[in-house]
Length: 222
Length: 65
Image 1: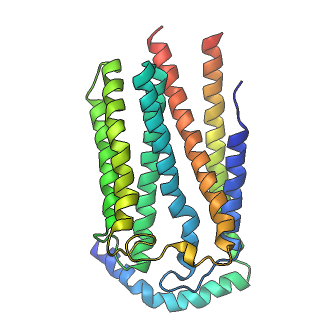
Image 2: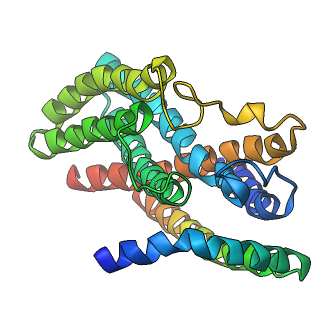
Image 3: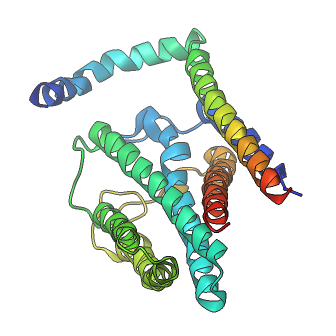
């Protein structure tokens, strides 16, 4: 019996995010951000979701290596795929936000470069998969690739930016993160549910994808 | 592309105008229009996902039968 409660929760939380994101109070007079600070509820969860999805993908890759079950490979691939979608959306929304605050679409910044390289690492994962016809070989290589890709991705996107000397991006280098501004926790009331909502949505879309792959696999092997 | 960029470069000048317009948006209650638009788009996307989910469930059940 399929569990659907978390999907309904995702929808409810997303409705809350959209309504609360615009109507609940937020510090709208800060520096260059002004009212764009509400982007926090949309841009940042893209990245949090991407990291969670990639983490789960990583776990499924390890499971595949342990048990050689094709379903695990499908799940690993689906999660990485939706993570890429969220990552792309994160880059696009970030770039647009940057144009109106930092006045440029892009800047050589540890966080931005880390994110871009991280995306390219996972794009290579897909190119690798494409070039392997044999199913079990493809699954095995992908799983091993993921084993290295994920830790490197975390270093690029979280560790290195925090250690950098200077950065425009909030939370990296010498720029303060948002928790300094949200002293009255108004933003947290929307931000935390928003993160959960977007993660659940990402997982939902991933499960749809891997269910299709499993069905396809089953039909081919009849 | 260049035209696009030069239009975008004018936007900070429009910002001052936009700020007063934005507060008009808030005070006259038109921010609700923005929220409504987003909710409609979101509803459409969720409706699609639910339809897809049901279709897949049906296919999975058919295979088991």
